[in-house]
Amino acid sequence: VKVEIKELESAVEEVVGRMGVIERFGKAADHIEGLAEIDTDRFGIAVVTDGGATVTGGEADEPFAIQSISKVFGLTLALQAFGDEVWKRVGREPSGDPFNSIVDLERQKGIPRNPFINPGAIVVSDMLLDISAKSDTNKTVREFLADQIGEDVGIDRKVFDKESSSGFNNRAMANLCKSFGNLNHEVEAVMKPYVSQCAIALSARQLALAGRYLMDGGDKPTDQQRLLARRVNSLMLTCGQYDGSGEFAFRVGLPAKSGVGGGILAIAPGVASIGVWSPGLDDNGNSLLGTLALEQLAERMGWSVFG
Ligand code: GLN
Image 1 (tube, rainbow, N blue to C red):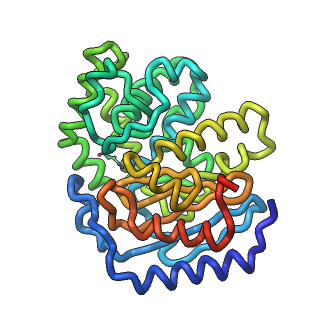
Image 2 (cartoon, rainbow, N blue to C red):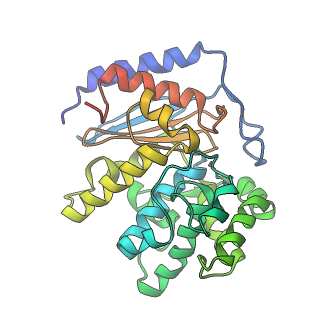
């Protein structure tokens, strides 16, 4: 699909201008030191089109911790390595609960509802530890991202240290999965790559570049790559914003994944990959300005998976 670049540039400029006059930004995540002290009025956006053009606005080159957005890339690696085996250990249903909720996990016998809530991503991290046994390419989410973006990818040390030493709730969920036999490795061995992938720091521009394989299946995609993109997109649409997923689909109409660092990756299939960042969060832990910006951009460009 051809995107009119001039139109996209003026749409991005208009959205950035509108974000600048909004005075309610939500709250930065307060459970992770390193995220709590960032100014909530900051905003950056980048759009990469299927044709390869990049259009940016605001602080598009400012790195932020991608947090739960990393769950998309972890799932991608697990699906590439294990195919449908993945679904024996994690479900595909929206949870209707917050990202860090533990209540449902016991009822589900340690099988998390989906890969985009914390326990789901923890189980996926456990699977990724087994990939090195099968092959030695693209073992970690960080290496996968560096490959997709074509640049080195850093880690936010402060966020990494804080989540390494606390994260008691995540450890509790990992232990519960382990007690049901849904974790092959030791809890601490799994927490380390999980916490590292959450602390990966990308800019909105890098995030948009990283999402290209979901927009079009990748460079000269095979049928299998297209299918993988379609499946990951479907989960982003239904589960990508935790218990705010239905509302997000209604307002924005695009598959997307948020993180408590304030980033959102959104995909207009066949058309564009969008990275947006603003650290103020709504009650579900999704970027408030980020969501608003995506809603306005999608409406203005006529992008929606619902026609
Ligand atoms: N690292 C965060 C956590 O485990 C990830 C959650 C998120 O981005 N929603 O709480």
